Length: 245
Image (cartoon, rainbow, N blue to C red; front, side, top):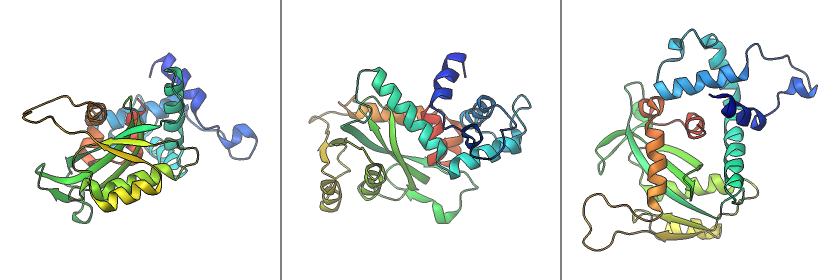
């Protein structure tokens, strides 16, 4: 990352316990190098053991990422950067409106049958990532399921996970026509969130840019640029790293 990017990321990073005099020992490697290594892994889809020698030893990078994932530091860093980006654009840190969509992705051969499924509509054998974004396309929440899980079945859990955090202000979510049904409506009503379906106009065929929905589709295309996410069909933690780029 550039010096300007690192300055933003560094100020938003969780402070290690040893810097707060709460015990522990200093990191053996620079956090900037560690984050660069994880970003390289997500972007290029290489194995941990295939990280270039320019980065710290792969095992140290893996242990760093695993520790951050275990303590939800990756999510915390992403949340801080997202809030800061919204405030700089003149918006509230927490959004009041969002968009939900999903993307089915073929899984690699290392993904077991117990965690993969077949999406007949998209002809994909693998997993499906369900995402919630704000109106600028910044990632708010992501859930990964088998590809055969219908969008309307995964959306309530996606919303629950996001709304469980204190301070959420979400009141309106735009979706496509797949997100319908009494069970889904009931789950959203429980949180006071209204659903608005964005439909195609009559007679429209082929690719059409639809109001609001194009934003979440652009975010899905951003994620698709990361080879690691495409190969593994989406890890929510690695997804947060990719989306924070």
